[in-house]
Amino acid sequence: MDKQKVEEAVKNLLAALGEDVESGGLKDTPRRVAEAYAELLAGEGQTADVHLARTFECEGAEPVIEKDIWFSSTCEHHLMPFFGKIAIAYIPDGKVVGISKLARTVEVFAKRLQIQERLTNQIAAEIMRCLKPKGVMVVCEAEHTCMTCRGIKKAGTKTVTYAVAGEFPKEKREEVLSLLK
Ligand code: ZN
Image 1 (tube, protein in one colour):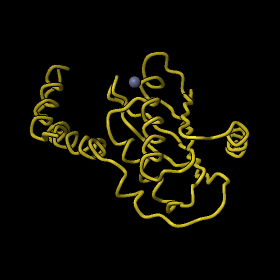
Image 2: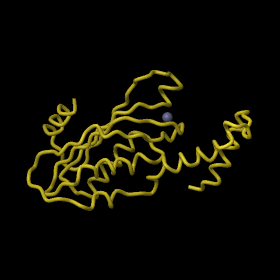
Image 3: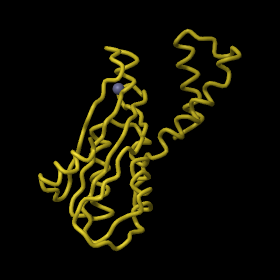
């Protein structure tokens, strides 16, 4: 990200919106917005290898579930936040990963311009690629501010997406979904 260019662009945007960019309150806004974007898009180009590399041996064929992983991301259609909770369930193939590492994996893919469907799919695919479990299932429930603050303005509307990769038998999926309720 070219911070200088982002600052200029924000300045131009404010001017185009008819704002006085030199006024007290707006003076530092371009810099602040550029810093905010640097943080919000910090996952761009990253992978989760570093987070999912350290594993622990573990017997057992039942799903490991981590739920209520809070995330916020930025919708690529409106550049507005969407946020919510993600649950990840995977069926280990002899190894498991430290629980905080799944949340770190979520961060990698949330901190970039996204759509919810792709976010959900990318997390599932990355866990398959790095951890190589038998199967993985990701459920994402999110509120989109581009929908709750503009457009139809339906506060509290949630969008649910899910992705399954590898082998995740139907009865295990149902078990996971009932545990997520
Ligand atoms: Zn949007």
